[in-house]
Image (cartoon, rainbow, N blue to C red; front, top):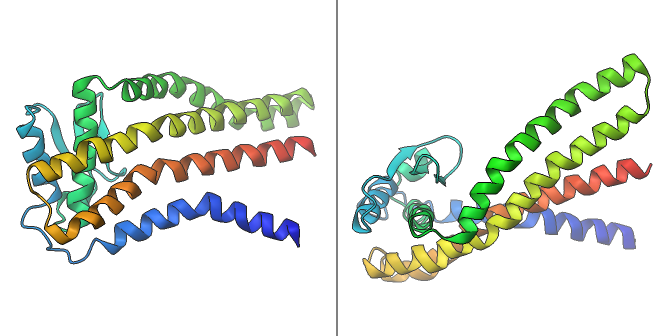
Length: 227
């Protein structure tokens, strides 16, 4: 019984944040015409107000994010064209990242360097994971299994590290950047402010759920290795 309870708690811990984030984002996606302008229009307006005319606002199908290399705020279709509270708030959050980049915010710079550095690690790890099982069958060398596990840890570990480092960056973008500028330019309807705070918290916690999933995958690898 104790094991079942622990497993249930683990599942809630790992999957709970992600489910909560999706629920909050969906909840405030209606009404779809809550605001006069779209998320893309708001992002462009806020960037221009802060002298960031050179930062692009682009449509993407890879999740809402700010790309510090391309200097672009990227929004999914529902945020780019949307006029809901979710679209407006998420657009402001991503503009918050652009402001961080412009001001040289140290945690964002660290994350950018880590992403660059770990790309090579992840590619090597993925290649070893792909090749090692085949070589193990052909050569029947048991040490190749250890190599495969090591590659798996490198790949999953680097992903977990990036997600954890991202957390302070996300909270800063939400509460030290996005919310103040929404207040400054009086973007939000008065009843929406507490809901916007909830949305900004959800936007910041997106990477926490991803980090927990990475840690769970590492735990699974460790369990397999102990067998």
